[in-house]
Image (cartoon, rainbow, N blue to C red; front, side, top):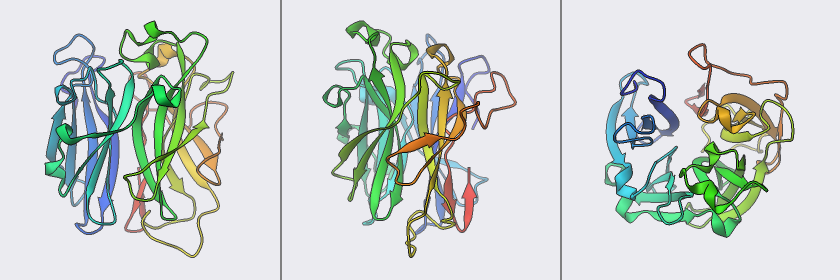
Length: 294
């Protein structure tokens, strides 16, 4: 998938992948981004594509931000529950307060997912946060784990921090990772912050977990084994300050329980791009048919 423009600020990305074993098919959620001021402006639309061979991809759903009456849509994640229902988790700027929120769309088929029937599952204020976005799901040991990018308030935070409709781009918060858990994809329990930036380092402003690999699993995430993995490896986006927002690079973190994470890349990012700003973010790691896919 290519950007719709070639200048800075245009891109196609923010991926989320799901392999459906019943269809032997991959589904890819992604986002079309334009710079601010370019119609229909930033975060204009999200799409879902389907493939059976990882080569040919066909778009099966496109959703524009006006379906949410929102200034922007960001990363989304698709998952099929144990009863075959499709659940599409997405994030957008809440028109009520200008803060990022997270919602879910549910339907019998991907093509039937409808923003008009969305269920908002997390807004920022009740959690004591300034934004909740970028959902990503891992099913582990019968429990769904929902990773979320969260804006944590600081002494710099004020009501004016949301005038730009993206507090993450202001430097008036800290960008961390939060966790919620569920047994049915309907009822969620907020667990709090699980990975936060430190006071120093290349990632002192942002540590945003994007995906998680159960080490030693070597199976589909739905497969059950005799024992859970001893550790989980997480890919996360990091930056030193808001001036690098939209240009994050990839670090690695490790956990034994998905609730407590420690960076293992304090010296700098582990993965970068050879192009342009060298930014490489939103890595998604999935296992299917005995192979890991990044």
